[in-house]
Structure formats: structure tokens, C-alpha cells
Amino acid sequence: FGPGSSGWSPDGNSLMYVASEDIVDRFQVIVADLGTGDRTVISPPAAPGGFLRSAGVWSADGESVLYVSEQELANVRELFLSDREATQSLKLSGTMTTGGRVLRFESTDPSVD
Picture (tube, rainbow, N blue to C red):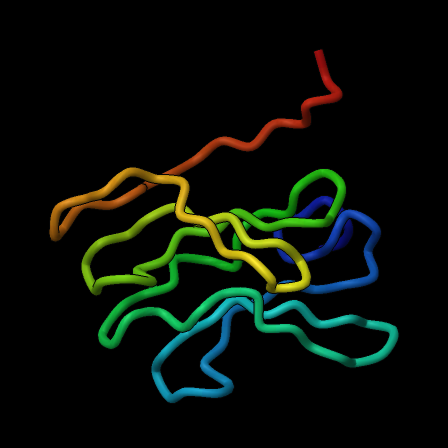
């Protein structure tokens, strides 16, 4: 584990994880500052009965996170982008039918040709 893996921020100062700390069985993406111990919930909770696929992937600059969640409806896994300060969560995938899901996304470093 370390900078460059999905949980660690690119600068290595924060760790992103999934937990149901605030609402039982309603998982959220959380970022913990390793220097201060402060934590920021950066995603809304998954829908009742819904699932949060993983902690997600950091952007290269460490300012945002991509994650897959059943955030709006159970059994509908969609792709979301949230900024590190939790001021905005944006659905990137299109409208899906019940049972529809994002299975995978690729992330690449835009600075690499």
C-alpha cells in the first residue's frame, strides 16, 4: 500500500475508505487526513439496500475521486465523481434501468503519452 494505490491520495497524506460510520448498512466514501485525523464524507450514503462498490480512484491531482455506487437506487450501480471537499457529487454514467450497472472504468494518467 502507498501513494498510487486507490485508497491513498497521490501525495500520501490521506486515505480513502468505505464505511457505514454514520448510518448502519448505508455505506459512504470517506477521506481521512493522516496528519490531523480529520475525516470528510465525500459521497452520499448508498440507497437503502444499495451497495457501494469500492473506495474509488483518486484523480492525479488528488482533488477528486471516481467511485461506483448504488447511490440513487438499489440494484443500479452508477459512476460518480466527487471533489475532495465534498461540495459536489456528479453522476457521470447515463440513466440506467433496474439491474443496470457500471462494471468497470479505466483510469489513466493524462500526463503519459
